Image (cartoon, rainbow, N blue to C red; front, side, top):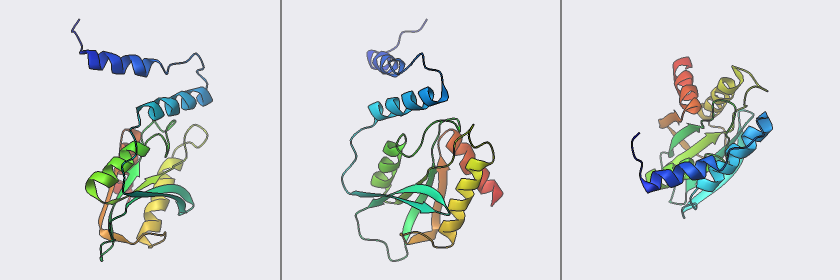
Length: 167
């Protein structure tokens, strides 16, 4: 057995504190959201957050308060992880506001439908609908389509790759 640092041991203990005997889907989602909130750092200054819909799908934008570039905002279209079953806009807020703040770009996170209530290809269809709405210049932000990046973590990374392959 290899020793682990005190910092890593504390992280593991904090993570394990969110386990529960409630293995229902609602219980798993609740505990996952609680865990994500517990690890979420304070939001950085200088960002405007806004919830709206693109292509009939809920999204959240993270917009720097800097003046908009004349050619439109560079944009990261972000898909959250969670095994297609857990997660959402709130659980991955910290990743999105860190990206928007550090890179000074517009981040748009997609609140795609989750399984098992909405089986494949629902999540992919939601991501594609948002992509198409951005391409059609829908929504409140001027986006530079030449500087649009699709990304995600875990299941969201799979959705990002699938979206790129499907375009």
